[in-house]
Length: 468
Image 1 (cartoon, rainbow, N blue to C red):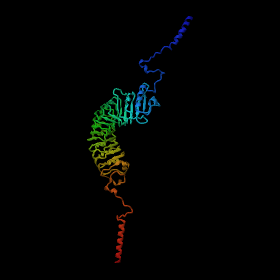
Image 2 (image 1 turned 90 degrees about the horizontal axis):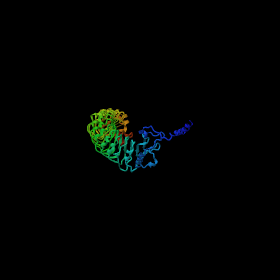
Image 3 (image 1 turned 120 degrees about the horizontal axis):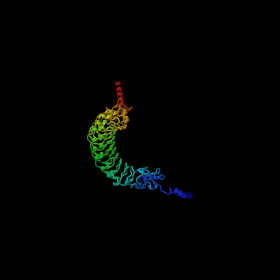
Image 4 (image 1 turned 60 degrees about the vertical axis):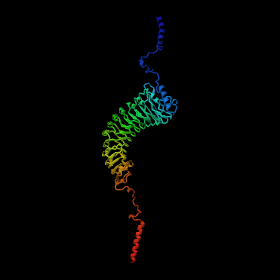
């Protein structure tokens, strides 16, 4: 027994020391081993992946000289000391990733004169939105999208506004930005046609290509953008008709095609846009009859059609668009009378019918339009008595223009109201120039010297008769 104890004690001590020298065996699934860091291992939170940080530094170095970004902000996304014009989010990998970039005006980074469009932005894997406002102003640059590089899956918004040095066409590679929801390329100097590839961006909710120099027609493929809610192609040089496929954009709430050279009529497909709130087609070359189903646009609040050679009577259907707040139909050659149905537009705040060939009287019901604050009926051939009382005239003031209608006149009872461009009924055009007599003037119309001379003659004749 003594011998066994003496042999077992060293063995026991040896066994007790073994666990500290044997490596631990993990029971974790080997496929998830790299996703389960040790409990005590620090997470790389508040830092960026080195490759993404390097890409961001290169973008900033090419765009802005406000400061030395590498030195002043070595950790671009670090809370409390992040760059201006940058937003970051934590990814599933626990790294911070750039989600938004803004360039152009303070407090965002301003752009140096040599700045050109940085296509490297599409290498930022978590980028969601990027904005360039008044950024490319000196050095000519083009919009470029890498063709062979996968765009960020989260990229939703690209906005370039007020960049006078952004020239050239819209690249067809824009179609690689599959997740794009908002594309704003406004107030630049982009040229060429609208690329057909842009209409493959089925996620687009808002498309703004206004204030450029785009040419060609509006492609019929426009109808494929079924999620589109806002469409602005105004102030370009587009020609041809409005495609009838616009009626396929069932979610469309606003479209603006004004200030182009569009021809033809307003397509019948318009009547299907039941959610449409704003429609602007001013300053084009549109003509002909209006769609018969126009009155179906019961959500419409703004109808801007001035500056087109329409040359038809005013459609009665306009008076059935009861939600209208602005109706602008100036400079379009409309003829005939103003429909009485226009008096039913109780929400109307602006009515512009100037410079047409309208005849007849102003509808009496216009005086009951309680929300109206701007009315211009000038330079037509309207006649009759202005049907507005003094309170209506005072409320509109200078925002009421009836000038250039020789047949119109204002009731004498309202003659004291503000000048609205018409004469008082019963007076000629020079009536306003006749001044009343002053109290010092003879009421008989005789001048004072003539009156005295006549009195002296009468007195002299009386003296001569008394001598006889």
